[in-house]
Image (cartoon, rainbow, N blue to C red; front, side):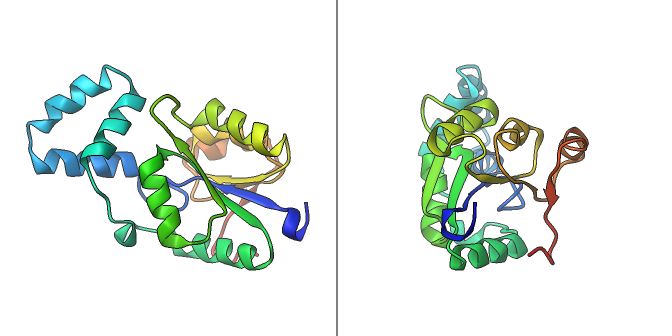
Amino acid sequence: MEGAERVICVDLDGTLINSDLSIEAAKKFVRKNVFNIFRLAVWYFKGIQYLKYRVAEEVELDPSILPYNFSFLSYLTLKKSDGCKIYLATGATEKYANQVADYLKVFDGVFASDQEINLIGENKAEKLTKTFQKSGFDYAGNSVDDVPVWLQAAKKILVTPTPKALKLMKSIPHTLFRDDFK
């Protein structure tokens, strides 16, 4: 994959931003009213996807104040200017993913969780492989949930990886993103 043919799919939580949108939204929801913690508990028992979707209905997040990984964002901007197609591929809800993508204006498309599918792990790997074919995309992520996606990607980019993800990827060729990355 060279130049304009290259596709880079990017995880949001812990990779593009130094936080987790679902957790930030849940904390904001509880700060609005401490008794919302009981609503979270009820929604949790209906499934994590239901919980994320309901919180997103209740909470607005401002994408301009998120803790972005600016060195990685600069790398993506550079790759975009080189002709790469850049996609946001996240377990965050469509609402939040689209808000981030609209704000940053670097993405060619968005893959995100909806009411039925939590787009993490095998679900994300399946979606990206169906869209771009096995080894038809590079993938940047940071957690154990990203391992199934990395296994399908041509290039595996680890951005601020968790120790467990780094350990699991030890025997698999990968690129560890650094600030001086080219």
